[in-house]
Length: 250
Image (tube, rainbow, N blue to C red; front, top):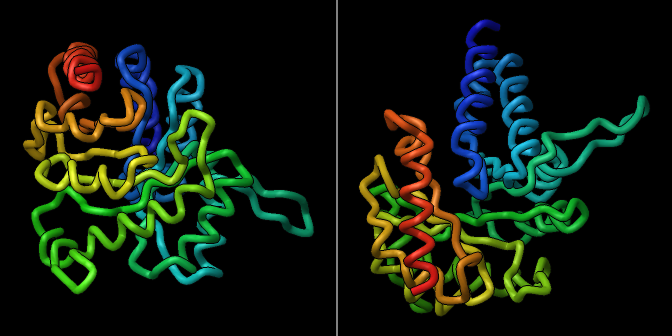
């Protein structure tokens, strides 16, 4: 219980300090779930602080399962669950990350939940960890696995297409392997990229320009440990914001 309260207080303070320089808060769900019920309460506190700061609340849980379970994940993350005793609200996230390896039918319930809630989804396309190459870069007759996933994301993007021309069906594309970004942007011209890996993982924001080809709103660059662990988190967030603004408008 005390640990959960401490995490909630830390999140509120951090969001208050860095919020003016950010567009989103991306909590890693496992870091809260490991604390049990108190961790879920801390997650809800972070969500409320994000809303008060006017920030997108992006739940990083990489969910994915067979369709019936995927529908339950959609209810848990962005929707609600009907019961004989009334509707039970879920987390109320604005967007979440999802694992596509079970295929299209496992993604469709998540897209349905997003469409109903006005939320977004970020599908893992090419992740930032070194081991991603073991599977995601394996070549096949139709290109690498990450290119095939990108093609699926593009096919699905029309489901949540906004008036601005960008879709609520986004893609997780690791900033640690920038050589893939230009090709993935070709394959997913309407997709917002979530580009993890800047900061503690060593990704260079200066190499991310291709992700912003459709415009400044076409990519989100998290630096969770790089900002939260900095001596001055607000200064770290401001510096990254200014760097990305220059890159996205180049």
